[in-house]
Image (cartoon, rainbow over all chains, first blue to last red; front, side, top):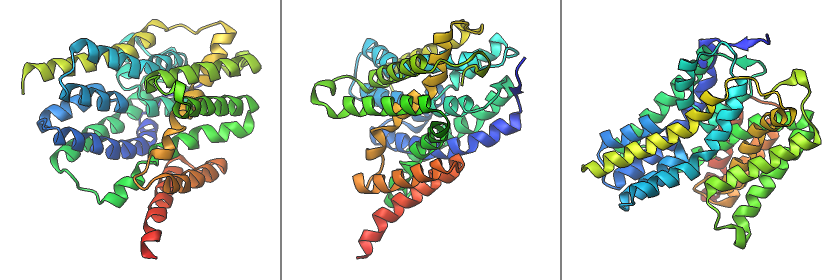
Length: 238
Length: 105
């Protein structure tokens, strides 16, 4: 069996940058929700049960405007469907020693960033590594939400503005290095980025919701990669 | 706080969790099909690229120019394979400088 990354401490360490990024995003969420008149305990409860940025921001505005339950369910499904894609990919990355029971917990913590870092490991990953990786971002997400809700503007405006780019800096650091080694990865990245921009800037494509845009772009670009350069048997999944 | 908000919270959390949990619990064996395995190999890069562009251009409070400053710094450092934290923090610093320096003139 292939090597398995299963150190809790390594997971914790890898989770630090994610937790820092989450602090600022969830801080903003907490502030917005508090500005909408919701009590702090309820706002923190949203973050502790959902652990997703786009879904929470959309859900917040939906419930503040008194939307229907079915509307909420559909909105969350569309916005978060990309997680299904990530979970399928992560299911192949988990070591065979990961028990079914653990999968229920790991699934809860499968956010964009945690998925990205787990995917970036060269070996397959085990339960202990995943729990370590999820722990600090989860605390950061809840803590940031609390701080944002409790104190409406703790950070000076200039600093908050600059922190907004942190998460994208992390993403770039994950996908740019493999582009140098693999032309196929480079093609996949450029295709996905190009399509995503097309959906954003071309007038007749703008009506597609952002949740669907990510799914469409990712599926098209990854399929292109699989056609131009299928991975060999021993490479496995990323 | 009315029941309405708590039910909406339960709907949100329930749907979000099911979307994440079902695939992870259903696909427990190694997928053998080569195309699907290759597809899943490329998915992380494709998802991250689609989430980064064009969102990064409007990720800062100071508008396109400060975001571009941060993006360029991040791309260069990522190209030279610096760590995640280094790249993220240097991008933040570049944005901060790009927004702060013009105020000195």
